[in-house]
Image 1: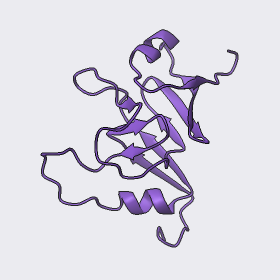
Image 2 (image 1 turned 180 degrees about the vertical axis):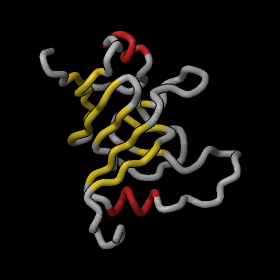
Image 3 (image 1 turned 60 degrees about the vertical axis):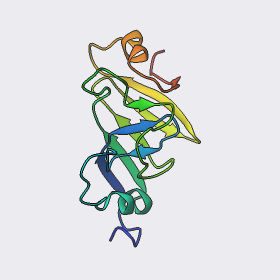
Length: 124
């Protein structure tokens, strides 16, 4: 199903996402890895990729990066990123903020985001 291109949408967790839509979600160097699983197949075979993850790591550092620092699962594969702070879409190698979560200010989101993005909020 996946390799045949029959999957319209895949929703994955992520460890890091870059401003170009690169995804790192299968390993942290130095940690035991049992394998990459089907994530690489999913990101190459599904028509649309949505990543759901926390915006920062346990140290408060952004997981929404200019460049991923962890090994990549796929380059420029993410179509939409959803975090507890906002929703981003990726088009033509650019990242757009399309929604702020309730109670989150634009200033807070910018302070917790390493990646550069454009704003495409309704009403802004």
